[in-house]
Length: 381
Image (cartoon, rainbow, N blue to C red):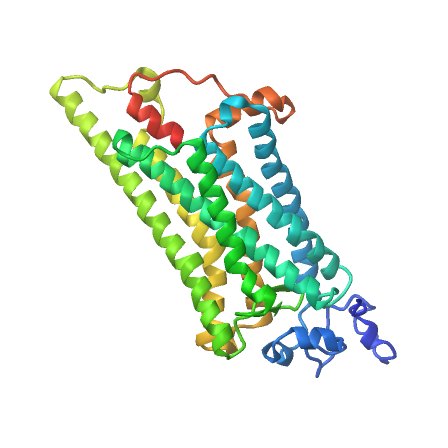
């Protein structure tokens, strides 16, 4: 189903405006002027009262999606490829990292193409409502799967670094069970709006993407919104903050103990020369932990905040552009995750050097460390 080009409804207008490029909008128009009845029925009336968006935003977002699509396909595809090729990477921890790459890979695969086609061919979503719901469902499943995977990665690192030998061992079977739970939870929590039994999916923001309906004032919609906000944002963010704060605290304590012991022995450091010449372990772990949490917060907080404001706050400040930007922010995470969780890791980089030499990675071989606990801390990060 096509809704026509951006300027079909302006044909016959005596004013040339801007020679057909559409960067200046005639007064009196709204965002749904010229839209089909299908588009109007798929979107909340809140969006109908706003003037048309400058098409420059659509074109710019379209180019951003193309860029992110390429980066995500390359980065996540590379992580999956290395995991398949390199046997030494097939550890329980890396199973979770690859699951994150799979979630991010399919997020962009299911979201970017339809959006790119839409923004470069029309002012509005060009597919029917079934495709709208499918688009929103796929985005919800892959997004929640990525969020939960990051939580389980944090849990695994927490066990290794904080609990050490006293913590539960994550075996391959246990990692596989985690992954099954992640996808079952993501599908289960995203399915009710698709089946229209709890919550709903609708066009959002600039009416070029579909997502969770947070504007309809019914118990069915609002209760689902509170449920998914609590179960997929608040709980996961709290878990991440707890795990990584404990990791940083444990590493700082470990470093402090090493320094005190070295002082008692009248030596500069208990570390090897190679370790002493680099960044301290606590700095590396703190940096990685901070990046992990900040990327997650920056990617998902805008979506959660706009949803809550639209449902329970002053929705008049939720303009179409404000409603669209959070959807864009969640896609950025799929580009950064491969770099943070995999490609920056020494073992992944060594595999990259061996199986994809055209990437031009020059990674030195990993040398065994005298401080085994510190090495475990660093390489796990």
